[in-house]
Amino acid sequence: MKSPVFHKPYLLLELAPDRRKRKRQLGRIVTDVPLRSEGRSSDHTEIYSIIWMLRTDCPEQMQPIKVVHSDRPDIQLQCANLTIGIEITEAVSSNNASMDRLRETEPHLWRTPDDDIAIFFPRRAGVGEDKLTAKAQRQLIRDNQPGEPWCGNGAESWAEAMAYFVSKKIKKADGYARFDQNWLLIYDNWNEPSRRVELADAVLDRIFQSEGVFNTFDRVMIQDGHSLASFCASGIRRQRRPRHGR
Image 1: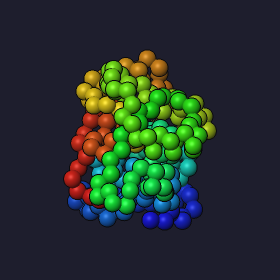
Image 2: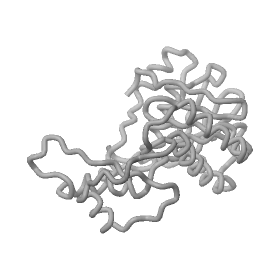
Image 3: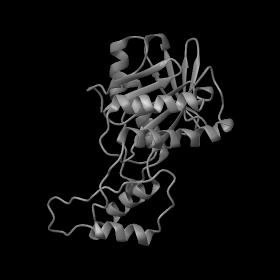
Image 4: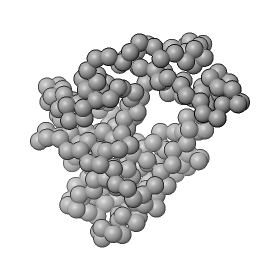
């Protein structure tokens, strides 16, 4: 899939007031994201993320909606009575993302032509870790070792990682246009052990409250392929991903 060629800002989608028609509109939007080695761009992930969000959580009071793809922030939702600016980011280890790209472009590092199924051990990343050299990344891929056991409190580790990516965006917020509402949408691609979702959400909410996150972003949303968690000053809401749509 080639990167979009539209010049920003441009109208990505105008949603109809009728619920069933909106559902059909959102279902027709192509949200395929190519592999990292096949030309994936931030535009691909931004379109995927905003359509995923609207399929999951699109309140009636926000109708009608014009979805404008822009920069700083990445999306504008232009509703009848308000405009919402949404900045989108991916929570991912840059080292792990680079290693995924190497596995795609240099499969000989970790599998043979006779492998029907090739398995690799995920690498546990650290928040704010140093960048590994390409040589070191290739060696880790070749070794393919499980490493130390993934011990500790998965809920707290996940919350710490999400808070880290939010803090990075807060530091850049002065450069964004401001609207009636200002949201942050995170695609969670962070490798972390299993966690109690309710506990992890509660831990992250406490961090947000104590660090004044909602003074910058009225809402922080995190999507992980299964559900959408929404954090704001008044509480937390988590919704399952709907089955319709691509």
